[in-house]
Length: 97
Image (cartoon, rainbow, N blue to C red; front, side):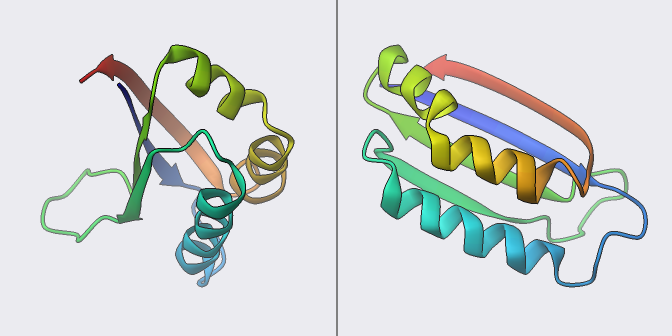
């Protein structure tokens, strides 16, 4: 099993509904990409200064499933249409569980 963790910082002045739009889009992805074994995501709670604004934790059966997810047309469209316009910084890591 492979775990993918990605965190995002939003651009200054991102629309007020950005976090809700990200959650809605990720919900659709969780339903449309069969390689996703688990998909958890949400906004930072604001408990510490300097945190990223949003986090996604996804699990996949193996590295091949993760690779298919990365290039899946729905994922690519989400990144292009919903993430790229509002994200200033992104960090991620993948590891075996």
